[in-house]
Length: 206
Image 1 (cartoon, rainbow, N blue to C red):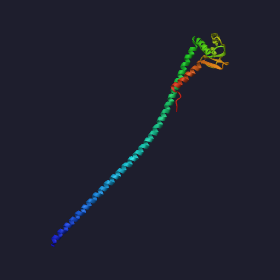
Image 2 (cartoon, helix red, strand yellow):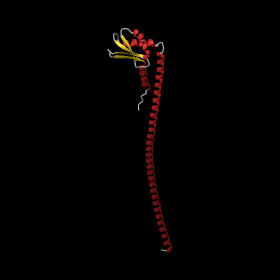
Image 3 (tube, rainbow, N blue to C red):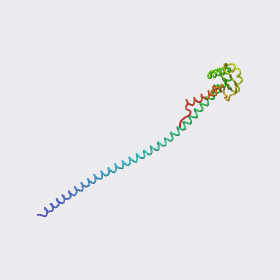
Image 4 (cartoon, rainbow, N blue to C red):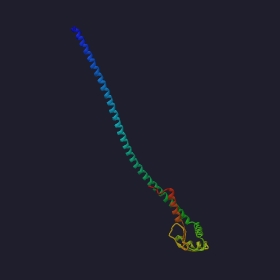
């Protein structure tokens, strides 16, 4: 075989061998590249998942912290508001008590007071019936009306004494019947304040 022909054959073999090696190298590079891409995607996906989980955990912790903080703040504000409202309503009750007390005081100083006492006495006697003995309690300053009051009631035996109340009205006590009819302004005002407290909700729950 001529030398040139042998060289050419060798060159072709080398070229074919080189092409095969190169092709394998290229294929290997592609395989490695694909593997790297796949691994990279797995790493990125895992990182995203970890970041997402960490973010969710952080968010949950932050939400819990915020909820706890806001819950404490709201509870404190509600307690403060309850106290403020309670004080306001108590002030309203006190103001109402003072206004009614002033009206009662003006009424007991007027000419209409004695006729009103007579009406109260008749109502108290009617509440217990007739034919009994009883004691009528008045304010010390109202004892001057005792005679007129006694003459305004019939069918009963009445005695008069000073009571411990201050605003006015009267209280009738019958020991034989074991009954007491309280028609004092003091009791009426106390009932009014208690009723006001119920309506206004003075007793605020915790």
